[in-house]
Length: 225
Image: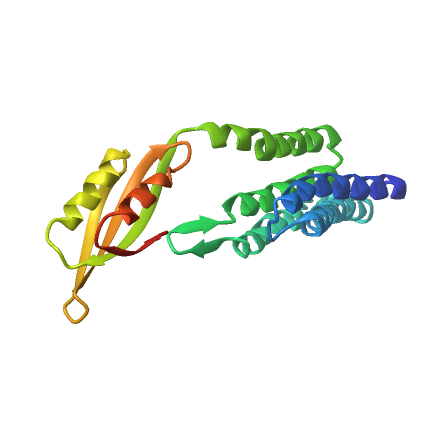
């Protein structure tokens, strides 16, 4: 059996590591924050400790079947169960998906808790440090990277010839690649609604192009997603 003080230390150690990751998520206003990560890591560590203790307990009582008993079976179910918890923080809003990083952190923290519960303190600390570095350090790098931004722009204009090509010309002048255009004509109000599906490779999209489009003669309304 594992010493009681060793068990308590493992649980406290796991809770501290979970809190470190949860604190970063809390600062960024994510749905799973400090308390969620702390409790998750603590619970995973407890499952691991129980698994080990059950192994030793059965080995003492029934040494002949000890080799056929897998001490990781209880802990392994934690990884499966965490998938449902992680799925709960993934949110789809229109064409964007939020919460994937938080879901990955939930899964990683569960693994950290199991590792700390097994007594591998160094490994658990290294993974926690690397997780926090990826959340903080790599986020700065991501903000400086040129990447593809997918956007939808809806423009409502007066029904006049040539206005749609002029809007597309402005978008392409600002390096927006128009992938698709959807048109809808309102004969009663003499309006045309154009939906531009675009992609722009840059660090951050330039909103000045919207002002230039909005200043065109005949443009009534403009929206971007």
